[in-house]
Image (cartoon, rainbow, N blue to C red):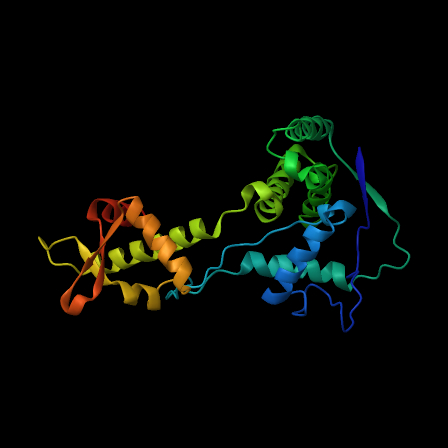
Length: 278
C-alpha cells in the first residue's frame, strides 16, 4: 500500500483571468464566489469531482479578534513557509517519482479506519447521505499523510502517528462537507435567527452584569425596537418569528413601558446562567 507523489512539485495551477493560484486573492477567494461555488457543487455532486476536495466553511471570527500587548510567536509558521518555498522553487524537470509507503502498523490502521468509514456509509449511518465524499475519505487521509511525512522531512515509511494525524484532518473536513452539503444538516432559518438573537442577548447580559452594582436587580428590560435595530436579525418578519419563539420558551416577555413603548424583558434565570457558562 503506497502513494505516488513527486518529491518536489511546483504550483500546478495555471494563472489566468478566470483561474488563479489559490495562494493569490482572486475570484475563488471572495465570499460571493464561495456562495456560487456552493450552489455549483450541489448541482454537480453526481460527478464525484468535488468529493476529492477538502471542504470547509469556518465560522467568522469578526468581533473576537482582540489585540494583545505581546507579539505572537511566528517561528513555526516561518519554518512552514520556508519548507513550502523550497518545494515551489525546486526544479521539477528530471526528478523521478517515488512511492511513499506505510509501515506495517500504519497499513493495519488504514484498513481499520477504512472499514469504520465504510460501515458508516450504510443506510441510516452517519455518512450515508454523503457517501460520495465519504468514499474518498481514506484516500484523502493517505494523501495528507504523505504531505505531512515529506513536509516534516521524516525518514523511512509513513508511520501510524502520521496517518492518525492525517485522519483527524480528513475527518474534520468530512464533517464540514456534511454540515455544508447534507440535507439532514440544513437548519431552518427561524432556528438560526433564534440562536443568533439569543447569543446577542446573552452578550448584552454579560456586558450589563460586568458593571452592575452589588445587590442590583438582574432583570433586564430593553426596548424591543433597539434589539431590532442593533441585533443580528434585521428582517421584520424573521425578527417577529424569532421573538415569538423566545416568548413561547419562556426566555423573554414583552411588556409596555413609558409612552407605550414595547419592552423586551429577559428572564434572569435563563440568561444569567448562559452568560456565566459562556
